[in-house]
Length: 393
Ligand SMILES: NC(=O)c1ccc[n+]([C@@H]2O[C@H](COP(=O)([O-])OP(=O)(O)OC[C@H]3O[C@@H](n4cnc5c(N)ncnc54)[C@H](O)[C@@H]3O)[C@@H](O)[C@H]2O)c1
Ligand SMILES: O=C(O)[C@H](O)COP(=O)(O)O
Image (cartoon, rainbow, N blue to C red; front, side, top):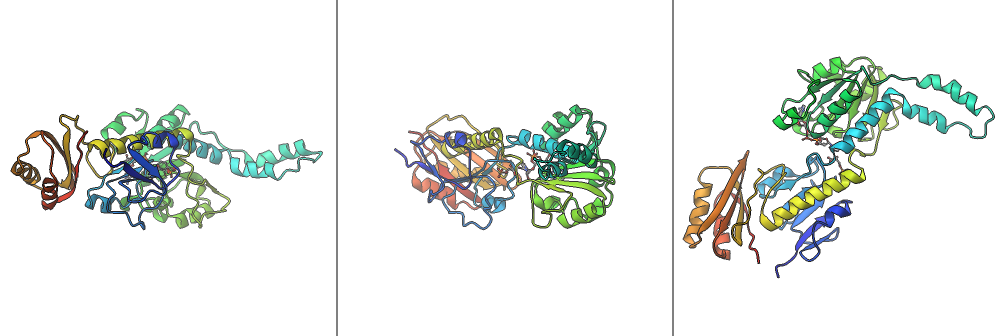
């Protein structure tokens, strides 16, 4: 009986996902030591000493900026995420955010909270107060969407259905995402174009070097007066100081965001939520199940689906003896791998090799058991980052 896989869980991950890792072959929990894999949501792994035995990381969500992906790539460790699994939850919260801003719901609620329930003129006070909170309707307004991936495309579709005009910008849109966009979405030339034209601007990009401070003092100066900026992306995508200045100048009407950093807290025109975008039972379950299944397929069979730093690679088992190799995407790796196996008298039954950027990944099924010396020889090949032997009973 092989040792069980050990999975360290860093956040509150849905039990439905954890149940996908059966207790006879997995030890899963927050106190697990010497883990083979880590499952998490938003815990910050950058300062963490990631144990050398970690073979995979599973982010039960979309953003992986809390994980040292480049360092994991250098170790040949895939970082899995759950594309689209929480997109509907975020879309619904964006719609809520637009409505909260357009209808002044936050100050209206604060006004009602302060009413005296015992006052004889309660109804009169309600009717007198409501004029301060009159708003606008969404239909007919222009929504600018920056980032048209899983979330952005759902937001576009919902906004069109609400009667909004939609303008989208995404310089790296995938073919699949482009196909899933409603035909009515107009293409913007850039962030400036979106800011100039939209009454509502919503951000759905990952936090990368290229997207840090994507919305800043320079381009906020172009915003339509009273525009509403929504940030359900990441705190660093928006320059908070620039937003505060734009709100104070009344250039921006509202800033709705899911990241209540210290600078924006308690500003009267900021609606800040506690990173709630993906916090629905449905999204938490979808993300955890998707990532746990991907992690299990990788740990047991070496197959890779939805790793942000590896190609998708999957091969049906054609023999009981499988070797999985992560290697640099450079010439002659396959030649060296097959030579090392041939020297040990191993016959390759079938193999698959794919690459993505600097990373390549190879699965090899051989006809007979693979000795430790062969695994050691494979590990010694320059450019090989990680080797795993995955025999089946
Ligand atoms: N608030 C929350 O709880 C919550 C939940 C889910 C995701 N998120 C955040 O939202 C981000 C997007 O999620 P997703 O599921 O839509 O991801 P996704 O990968 O499907 O889409 C991201 C899109 O951004 C585009 N993009 C990249 N750089 C860009 C740029 N400079 N300008 C315009 N577009 C650019 C990409 O081409 C891609 O289409 C995540 O990375 C995460 O940071 C937040
Ligand atoms: O990137 C994501 O998926 C979201 O920010 C959700 O984060 P959470 O899983 O910590 O709620």
